[in-house]
Image (cartoon, rainbow, N blue to C red; front, side):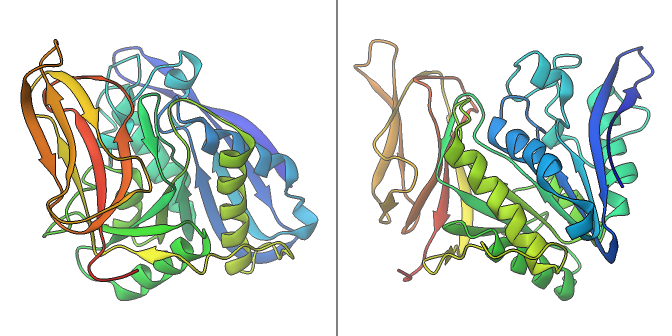
Length: 319
């Protein structure tokens, strides 16, 4: 069985939207994998890969079930709106686990979490850099606050199978806290192993970025015994990061970065600065806290106070 439908969603204020979702039910028994994309409307490679997965997977070849939501933030996708849902100006990846009585974005989060993903044994939430975000491919998984080791190990295996260069682990509390309100973290807290791969950026979609996401999901399907493939990819140079942190602007001005995504840096290295609008006076400078790699940078020149400028992975004494 295989079908694609739109699930209607509405809030108490009269806002309404849809969640385009599909189900592919295999002819053999197996686990349930949920694959989501488009949590941010202009992160296109994951959406393109998810649509292709629906087209390519034949139920005759599948053991188990794939549930997909291609455009979790349909209004943002349709209106080409970066980061937020234009109906209520909220960032979907900040509001999980959601609120059934809240605004439309909070209701969407609730429906995604409790009507779609809660039916699954595993979850992949595909992301990219948004329209002003430029990144090097990497993948997150979440360490549960109650240290449910088996779930962590399964998520870690999925992250490795995606075969990207870098793996980052985050927590909702403690020193690794950085994913509060995120989809993948909330799913993991329900006891479902989940990963958030990040591929592509600056509002672009091309064959390379779509294929990386597509192949990553196919790798996980093979890992789970759901869809065997003769074309599984591996990455012998994969690096597991010791920690992950972001740098944010403390003022308005002109953002100048001295590194690119994928660049390695050493502790104390100057990574970026902010100048006044004449480009003359340095208002703020940013230095590396430890040896590591640039995973993500804001691609734009203008910055405002509290903008996220850089996402950095720490590599302590590893190649």
